[in-house]
Image (cartoon, rainbow, N blue to C red; front, side):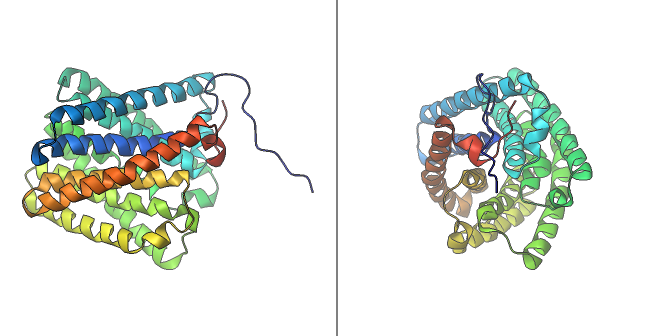
Length: 321
């Protein structure tokens, strides 16, 4: 029997940039935004939160440059990356990073944030269309609904959150209800699949993504003047987070892998949401923000180390340009 060695990238810089770098960066950006909100609430210097945001933003910009360089060598490489689950999750997370980058710019310059938001929406739409084409033309197993679908299709709620901060109420309203509809459909289908099918241990960390839409929808609902609906999402986020905590040994049974990056953004988004709710949610939100920091940063560091060592692309089967 002949064994095929892993494909080696030809000479050239950033020919195999792995999309898997983006989920932990998304988590770091979400964490920085959560600390920006929580700074005033808990007496943390605003400058410290801004420094964190600046550092993570530079990391995102550098990572984006490396993937764009790969894309410019062979544009069709994006289709190859979309054929594997880590690639789909990573590229969707990269688009959501664009939205959060716009959110990071908003307090300093709304004029600069708006074009970034529009760029994010355009790239997101292209990605969604590519995924739909892949699901139609690809093998049947690729059509199975996974939590990554939240990043790809419900992820427009992140744009709604940023649009809300920019005062774009019409765009916020449309994206909110579209995202809510998609989120509910994915939750319902996923619940039925979870009941009927066994989730392989290596893929279980992806289940944490189900938490993110509840928190993001809650933040936007709160800003839209719907506190009752926001409170409902708050209760849902508590239930989903409690399920994660109670089942953490089962969730992480396969040990550390790059897919642990999926744990980061949901935790940051939930901490941000609870702090935004205020009142009785303020202290739990602060506690979760600290815990999220202690979890997100080490995961991001480990994934980035794998990237620096050249192992992340191999482990996630990233395409070669």
